[in-house]
Image (cartoon, rainbow, N blue to C red; front, side):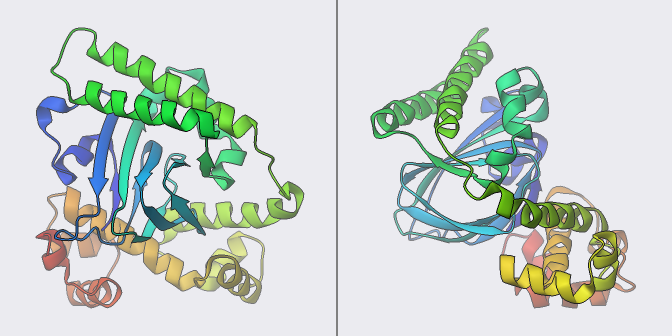
Length: 291
């Protein structure tokens, strides 16, 4: 499933007990159960997203580039970066912590995470061996506090635990070298700018020429560049962004399929339905019902 997530809709989408809902933070623990397949999906989150691989492994595409995330690794996603889950091992177990933009604004260290280009292009990090156990204990403690009964200081205590965890992650990044930064900078600039464009225009523009002109590149160069660097063509990425918008509207709005079709600038509802089924393998109605 591909969705644009906010703290307002994540509780509904992931069936979180409303009594556990906290201002500015959400904590999820997910397992790849054999009887309930953890399917490939993509998502955007309107805040800072932290993924802790507790067991097993996963392959994911984060902001156009592919990564293998193994037990002990931490994935740090800045606001609105797209993550596609490609595959998970049978024993995969992940704890995800989502922090809203309002939560981030209150703490300088979190603001640094949002603006840091190194984190943007090195989203997967691992702590030193002696700190892995501490990190696991701290993540477990955060989960326990998140699910405990409401109290007058619960939110404050949870915030302090999260900030402690963020300082541990910050130290891990400070020990990394941003390898080949000069070589990568132009590649990253093009990918970043293209991502901004399709986020804004995918529902209106499908022309390769349109995106190439906006980036001051030739259509041939942009097509070749994206295929080589990301494995997908310009139009495949445009379709991907369009499907993301469509799935978000289907899952988190009360709009009819016809209204969604109009919102996405399809001339006819039937065209939208065929497009959606061609890309996802299911009809919009079946997707909305969770099939």
